[in-house]
Length: 250
Length: 352
Picture 1 (cartoon, rainbow over the protein chains, first blue to last red):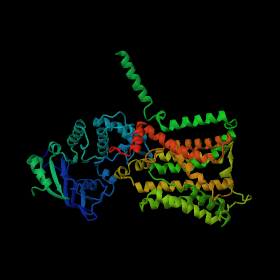
Picture 2: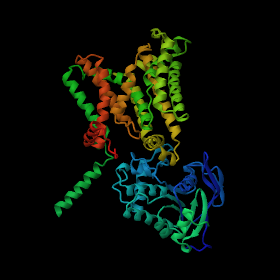
Picture 3: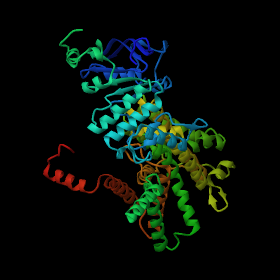
């Protein structure tokens, strides 16, 4: 699976920099994401992980640098553009509208329509039900308001939405934070299944146990810079931790 | 075992048939019941209340509240508000009448002119709120005063009256009848049907709900939330303009100092109709039924001999009471006892 000869480059970001006023959130970051791999992105708070995900998902634009998908240069200036390229995202705060039902949330911003402007509610319900059941998320019904769901169920909805959007790659920002043990296991299940479907997964996590269980490769960010890239098979938790904290220079 | 199985299948049947999606469990159902109860009460108490003519009169007065209410429903679902509607309504009346009397425009041109003026006021509010990021409360409060002053300055406190002998289809459109139904009734039905369709069935409507429900999430899903909010302001403004034009076509005169109650009526209708100030919730149906409830209350009370001024107290109290009721439904009444204790003891719970 993980032979270098079989790997196909899906997404590449070159020299990404992002500034917020005087703060440099990302400084010349290069990242490559291959099909069928789970790439972990780790780093301390404020290292720039979420900023990088926002850039790759079209919520933020980089100040410098370029993004390439299938060796074509692309400009992802809108989340819908990312969806068209096959990139789905689970945001850290889930990005759900709590007062709306599950179906409306699954298709937020990309509702199926008739004639281009009337929402095709029937199709929406059908596809939402299919998506939820194929993921094995335990929900009473897709008509349920999201505010009535448990934390794990909400996470499930957020993941399901990312999967509906993402034909080829899923970016997950802390998918198991704020989850119970069983619910976290469910999400981890989903991630490993994605990998089996030869999708690319970019996993951001504080939880090194999960990272080492799921990922093939890990990129370590520190103060907005990439300080190391390691194959999981050839590194240890101690080394990764020391790279995160800066105890060891790469 | 058998009984239990039967019971559980029964329960699942009920759950399926009357799921949360079904009408019976909604605020809309509650508001309909309240409306019917009030209608029943006045029919019983005031002998002429249920006569067709009186009901149509109520419909005629409620129509204006309902039409602007539809716009306001869009706005509040997108988590913005517009306090300037009452004075803006007066201003659009003044402009419509002035278009006819001043430069002598054709009344139909004046009609569309008034709608454009309204939409422009809404667009100004929307521009300042979305682009300059000033809270809508501040912007529209300022606009309220500006509109009030503008109509008074333009008219010198005197109403502008359109001459009786002006012949135009506008008066027919605004004040005619189809069968026994007054024109205002059809305008209201039309606006509500279109408004309800746009809000609840179209992609734009879904975007309005998403924007007000969780703006950040909506943006992350690729929705242009600024444009959505801006358009909601414009819709509200256009509805205000439409009402201004219709009322000139109906009574053929303007009230530059009137309509103080209008803002309060519209906001009451929207809140009583189940929309949440926190955004993301509300319906055109609820607003319209609530507009009728308010119309019935003021008409009914006056028919029972109450003073007109009482209606001010009534509408104000109604906003507070219904707002409280929706909070009770949401959080349960025990919260209030805790809060009261905190208020008296002056000690705030860290967990709120």
